[in-house]
Length: 369
Ligand SMILES: Nc1ncnc2c1ncn2[C@@H]1O[C@H](COP(=O)(O)OP(=O)(O)O)[C@@H](O)[C@H]1O
Ligand SMILES: [Mg+2]
Image (cartoon, rainbow, N blue to C red):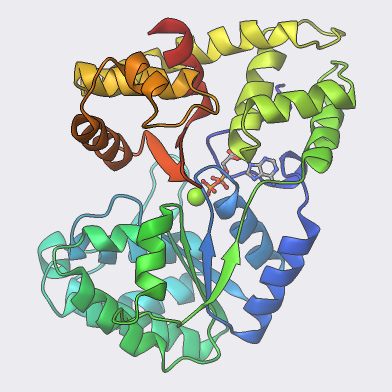
């Protein structure tokens, strides 16, 4: 069994402990503090939140994933999906259903697992009052037992056509629940910042900021050594630290790289940096179609900019050298191409530099394009 997992929430032995973050977040949950959790994709926000909230005794987590919602109806359905997941306890589900009867909820049971789930009528959930109904349900449930409400990928609220009105209405319910901790988590920095730091946003200064950054390289390297040992491989701490750096210290990318290394080595093997190449090839093979899809949507200039950034380490974006590499003399065209690449979330700006969101994609561009 591969001792590494990626692409899903990790728990138990797959989770590298983050004692300070876990302690601080747990303290906020216990005190009913609202928190805005911010961090790049795959840093481990969702795993940290689920593990921490589940560890706080006497608190029930209502976890709502807002990833890629597009309509108010999506929002309501995601909340009900969160309610369904929260517990097998029937009374809770029944209570929740009675509170949203306006949305014509239906209880069904998964034919394979038997797990109950609540669905709501898509049309009813799209009516303007469905937000109020849903938020009121959460408030009522929270008044009867201690809830911790998690809105994950919260920035995607901004996809809704009337996002500011939705935010204002959410805020007006939430502010009357001083004892219920709400955790708002998001990965798109500027959008999350806009919601919580713009003075005219309904959520302005309404939650304590909390950052989930990279795990300390030494801690993560020791975790990697122990996991490889569990999987019958040997690696020393220095090589493990180098692996962490290869994956830009992004928690999930480190796991993905390690998973591929484990997969391409034999029982008893000693892992060296030479094994990384084979691992990269495996990652590339698995991601082949998605990388291809990304590149197909780009103009030749945009691809060329990506290639230059992938190779650029330390080279200034508007320098002569960089422009030559890209093959353009127009700073305007370069600026537009960069903006499009940021829009597509392939790169992001960080301290005056542009970086790839995904280090494997960067390597693929560098090696294959
Ligand atoms: N504490 C951790 N220890 C080990 N791996 C982790 C940890 N947190 C996250 N990961 C890895 O990162 C991946 C993404 O984690 P996730 O919690 O979904 O991150 P985020 O919500 O920030 O995108 C997981 O699939 C797992 O491989
Ligand atoms: Mg997440």
